[in-house]
Image 1: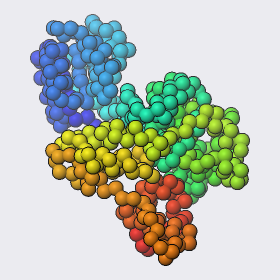
Image 2: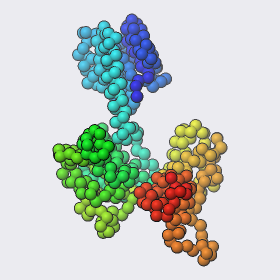
Image 3: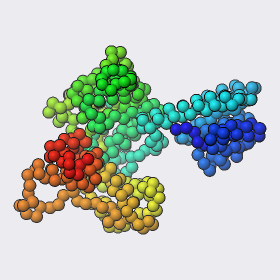
Image 4: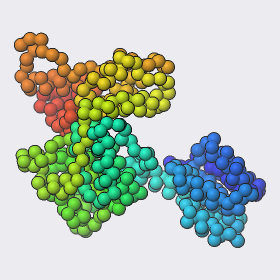
Length: 451
């Protein structure tokens, strides 16, 4: 995650050439400019990772770039170049967002130390953004649609986002629960702080406690060093507990304590750690029924269900189907470099009458596949969609099978359709990946199409 392209902006030619030479020896791609106008032209043509910027320039102040960069995501880091008489100005630049400053005349060693420090910081930021989900577009909602059901949901999101309330987001797989959670985070007062997601269904029962709360060195076999858990990483920000219904009773007890007291101990440790986090949770199951069956703690349920939000399935949002389809068509046309003007009349009709058991995620996957299969510069036709009905009508009594046999056959068909991808198949079946794995084992499908 090191730097690639650097701009040197200084009106003194000797400084520009000297710094350019030093940077090129270190295998950086370097562009130089003597004025703000020249730098603006370079920035308009290409994306740069770092800029060395003089404070005093013939056509303005280096602070003008800092003010502009503060409004733009993924802008280059700035190192201020200053003379002895303008250190105060350099400090002011750092207050405005500059990473560091260097005083003229500077040595090769000073530049090397500064570059190492800047690259280390840049790597830390990028790794954190990737891990916490902050690499997503933060200035615009990803919730797309115009139906009355979605408009109502968006209104509820805006009301609760500004609060500190714990939110339980319910809905079928693929309906967009994670997008709702991210929108709550984006609109909250914690939007500049970490956003940590834990997929409870994807982590084994033996490891989920460590994932939540971290562990001390030697806490269990393989724990070779201390590790912070997701709640620690989310301190000051927001944590999303995705598919919360999948956690074991033992972890439910510890999670209840975190929600009540905002404190916990790492696995194998005895030091109490306090955290300040906002908790969001999602589930595709009816948690109240799980409580009635004794599968989920009642006290934890009520701690999570402070503000419930239900995401409607796509079949109840018919007005959103083509809005979403058009948005996905544009996105995947750009992604794959295939120009497509729209959908044919038959394709539009087929999209609108399909029941979408896999909801928005199924629609998204369908459109991406259609973009890849469609003829460039032509309307996407019905054949490119590849939509098939999940069931067929019974022709005779011979088609009537025991429920277990029907379930087994349907699971096989879905796994075949998804190429053995259990996560995708589970989404289509509206069950957790863990539940699907249990069915695969129950019906002895390991050696067939399942992976």
